[in-house]
Length: 361
Image (tube, rainbow, N blue to C red; front, side, top):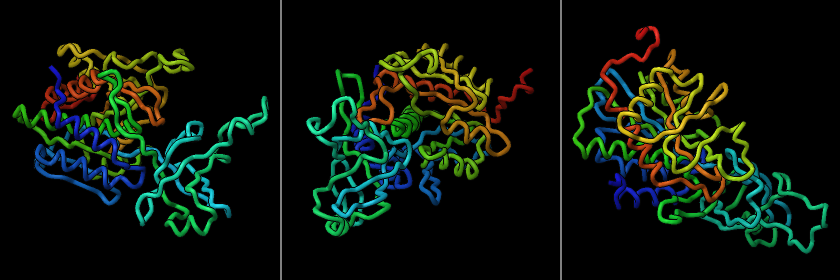
């Protein structure tokens, strides 16, 4: 039986369609908090916008489940005399997919629409074609000159997002920009909902954490972990489906959509906590995959693990196709199984439990 209902999917669509670029996540966080509010006791927020729904706020033992709320975007960097706009990245935006894309430029006057222009094929020299690069992609807002662009309210520093909205492909593939990683915020919110609806009483404090600024260096997690000071952190993010063309499995490993959550092996992943997750998946018959990461995970797991003298942390990832494009794709079954795995793992944790290797051997 599906654990996602109509209300869940309506929230997911609204949440994904809302723009929340890195550094400007507040509107998305409000959508998220409004949905989560009935299922938690209170909220913690910080000055940069990370939001945390708390269950049992008076408990000394603290468990975090975490995703990040920001999406990649662009900044206006330069406006030419003839009114064309050149950009720099805000996060890992892909210059190669930009040409011919519609964009929304966020200004104090509201959204200004534009397009990433590109020379017609007829005008490009055969065999000597320039490829899209950060230096040559540009946005056209239909203005005749720089003065007209500025009159619209566009200036250096305005943030730019893609307008692509949520769709379902072939009944069970969720597609949108910014699934990385607002789907994480969605999944941890669903864990909160299930705990509430199933009347589960936790013997510890649960901190459902939607961090900002992951795309520029795990900064939101780095800040909020100092505020919460958790004992355990279960982080969820996306990872690559490596079964599509031009990806080398010998380098990236073999993970694919539809085959279940991905459990990571990495120095930042605490071994005993990871084994608890694997045991839980096995006992609850939740399919899962494995992924090894060299040196670091590149997710908020790293920020939590190395904070506060060390926090037992682990990563449960959702396999995704076409990361950092406007057609990011995940499988509904995987979304549900990540939710189940986080939910069941949370229920398996005992109040005050230490995952230390030395305590167990």
